[in-house]
Length: 255
Length: 321
Image (cartoon, rainbow over all chains, first blue to last red; front, top):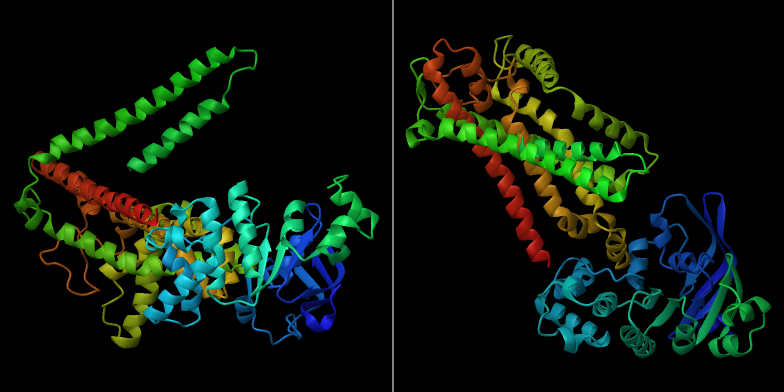
């Protein structure tokens, strides 16, 4: 496990309620900086809910109550005077289904920077090129930046979404099953990309696919029924889990 | 009008499906029966539409000249054109649009984006919109007379004009506002529906990039639903352009020698013109051709508005690809 001093995100006793339903029960964990952390567990175990508490996307759903602390760089993002809009600039998110805007590729990437007040054409061009290069899709789209992002394939769209997130220059990137709707080749590209990106970003990925967790992550956390069962170095989780439930899950006995 | 017939075609074919025959009946027989029922209702509707259009077209075509469009009626409406009625309808439609669309769009945005499901205000608005949508148009006319003319107009005249009659009488402003009330529910419903077609994922993408809610609405939600918004709005406008009942007591005039020059002037309108020629004329033989042509002009006007909606939708869809 990581020490709290080199962790990027530090969660203390976090509980989430949907109405009277408790979706997460007193989760505490340290998420290391510039590493890939994977959340695994069966459907409905709360891993996506947990991910969405990290950039306060759960705020958008009515009837949600959150207890506990999520500290990012030592600041509790649930304290009163936090600007959620700024938080989300710092904590980007990639969704399960690729969701580019019905705009050109160029406009998709510049959407975030423009919101942040960047309007110089030269600066925007630069951001578009670096973001697309970082997302490993520059070569495929550089000649048609003005065509609609919706004309691309699913895998390309997902990489556009990643580039769009990179364009606002976040510290942390949350990925909610980013490859679950993609074919194996596109999935491999996304995984390769994750490997590249962790040099610069802290990445937290939710996945149903245990091989994917094993391939991409440094640390893995196993959730079950709203509890964090176990969290350790990925290798340790997959070769020598401490808890029986973890072992049962990764060996495919349930879930 | 076309649109209504079309929906009734869908409804009637739906009804025939509901009256489905016993399960014992063989699949093929049932299929044949249903197919022919559907075919019959479609043909029936087509027949009605074609017959209606053909009668109006044949009856009105030969009189449709530039003089007819650009001249005032003459000799008790047995000669001349319908220029003031065209202008009146156009101006009324314009004022109605300016009044109804911003209000309707803002209400729709509130309902779709800001109101929580439990909000009492939103529930009240929804109830009001649904109720307004089924109120007969003549009631809107009576309301306009009572509210705009007798209440607002009367008090404005008392306060600012020493009781001299300026606003407390039928005029183009009150008529347009009454018509705006009629089209408001259509605008609200169609804009809200189009806004709701924008997927949740796309909104989340925008918010996750650090956009505020309003930035998301302005830059993602509205552009993403603009086709639906425009189409719905134009259909609402074309509905308003053809209505007569709401302007009956609120501003439409039988005959005017001048075009309206102020907001408190009365005006002539195509729909009302058809109505008076059909019911008030003393010389039916002479007014009948004019009536046909007026109907044709009104039909062309609303039809071209619908065409604009279709073309807009097509253009924007093509652009989004």
